[in-house]
Length: 518
Image 1 (cartoon, rainbow, N blue to C red):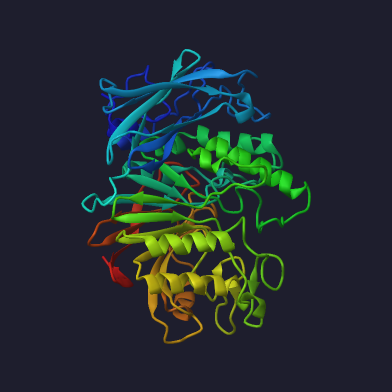
Image 2: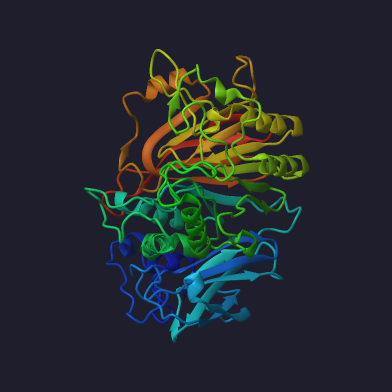
């Protein structure tokens, strides 16, 4: 019997032709990775995403050799027909939909199946067939019907998965929780070349062209822990800088070579090919509209933001970094981190929302943060501190529309939690939202629970209530009555299979934008 537990225990990389026995998770985790036959085109696994009340996206990408340096996964240079099935049960005795798609070489043999007409708030299972082989099984869900207030949302989120920096065990631990939805908040890959002392060797050098980005995505998808997390629940994704190039801002790259807009277009193309996104997110050259909202009945709206593609250049220096209080450019009234069109879209989403919770999934610190220890002050011009007017417009909208807003953030490779003020230039300003910052999957190595300067930083930023410097993810549960939050941490990722522990737990209540210990 193939059920949610055996999906985890058996490993998502095991095909349907092999029986998936319900063995203990811990024992299965220490097995040697499954080695697919050479002819198996499903070595990148399966995924789903973008749930609506009546639909979802099913994804796979065919690859017989994921680390082929041309980025095409060892596939033939011809279209390949792919059949798919969707069932209401894990044994596929109640198949509800079938169909076929064509995996084309110009799209790296990726397949995006956009389904509609499904039951709201339902659990489904899916699989693919191609070249005589059957894919792993994936589990997915549709969102509850509009207006539904009784269906909780179990949401987990994380960011920053650097293949060379460690093992993707946080993905496995997240899959074991069997969430309803997984949000990935940026840096799904790292474009860097080879490290001098990597934990794991990556294929290929720095990602500079379409073949390089395709190869990097393929190696991430071929990882068995990544496959588990993608197979257990639908995903929603947004990018940050390393999905394209470190520190890029709008049309301005960190380095001029190769020509940036061509590099960005290649990165966008590979990103779309390798994520369970809709046709609405298909790139047009060097542009891709990634901001959108996911609705979970009347319990929550998840507004996914793009803080990279439309932002103004970094204040004062033109490069990302720390700037002092004399950097007045960051206060200029027209500066924006979202761009005018996205700001107006988000304002409308908040104005018209009828959900209990409005979640903002985005990439960089929204709270003000003084990063200078002791005397003096220093602010990141890469986060919202570099775009103060943009932040003030957002907090004003949250406040005036009376939204229960919770900001979900990635980027900084450590767990943080705090309260977002209406206006940080006003010492008496009240809190209008809570910000939850997830740590990384692997970036920055094992880390520490606390660093020598942690307590000083917390004292100098009293609106920040929690820190943990290990790797991991954040687990939440949202209902009409409350949002519970568990910061999940792992002691190490330089070795595989570390257990996860809860390093901090909080409760947020509607109408009270503060963090309360659980």
